[in-house]
Amino acid sequence: MPSYRRSSDRVAFTLIEVVAALALLAALLTSMVLAFSAHHRQSKLATQRQAAVVIADELLAKWFASSDPRIPRNGAGTLHASAPWSWRTQIVNQTNIDSLPVQIVRLEVFPQPVGDWAPVGALAQVDVLLPVPQDQITQPLSGRSEPRENKLDRRRADRPTRDDGI
Image (cartoon, rainbow, N blue to C red; front, side):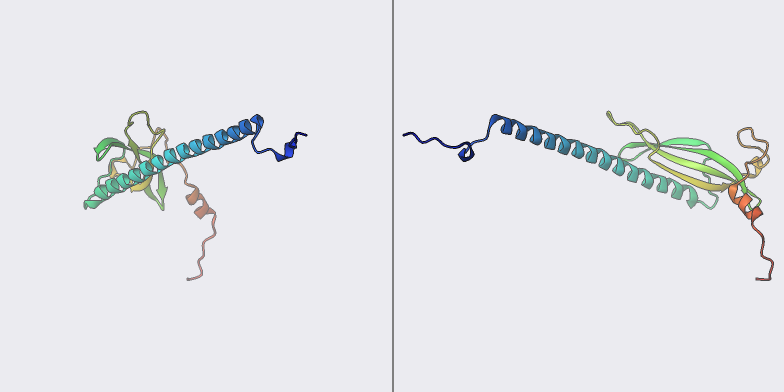
């Protein structure tokens, strides 16, 4: 009499089990490729940001190195190191700090587009507090008749002063 094997004694996989395993493997490989791609983009952006910070630091060091620092208030330029970079400065605010008129000048550093990669905005930006030049003290910024009130100035005015001899 022939002996029949029971289905629980089988040695091979069924077609459905193989297809399910392949689908699982495909999903796993796809997620790994997407994760690697995202990591590569983030790593490239981090390297670019680090280079932009170094360039901003070198620009500020060069501008502050002279005995009479000349930081361009509204300027732009290009730099060519290993890759072309551009920078821009602009006055973003003008206010008074302890009755001293100051301007907040923003330095932004941009890489030039390379191939299909171009940054959305500045990769590094630094705000520098500079005294207003003497010839610009009476000129309002962007059409304002008076500088905007600083929140810090308001807080100082609201705070009671201590006049106990300390």
